[in-house]
Image 1 (cartoon, one colour):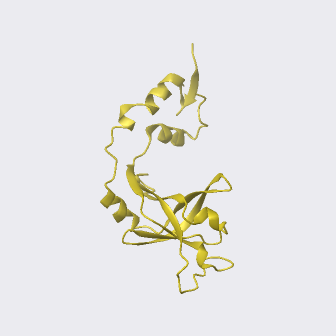
Image 2: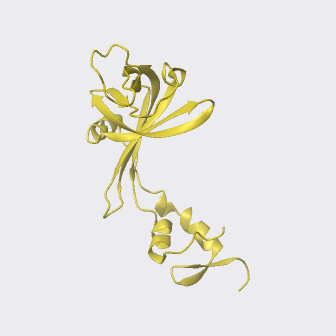
Length: 168
């Protein structure tokens, strides 16, 4: 056997064929972009997502609970105590998705915008310890985008074979 080969799904396959599978048109042929309207509609169907921001010049991604009111998105940081400068009027990103465990298909929506600390809340948020209204952040609408998620044949093959990732 000349060239690089790897054992995948119970058989030896050339590494080059894996590269072709990963880059095949069938994996990118889906018209999977969501319209802005679909993105907002799908965000309204979930309540947990991830917030991405910079803290001390390092990227940070946090699981968060959120509430959508029209096109206003409020995020509760829960027990994550973050410096105010990382949250007040900075550009942050948010993502939420939903995946069907049977088909492994679903959607993913991303929102980028300016964060605003919700200082005017007249209720105890109880979001974290210590409870602080600063732990609720609103994301001013910036750019929203999304796409449908489809199973990846390459990953499906690896999962079915319970094999380690081949060397590429």
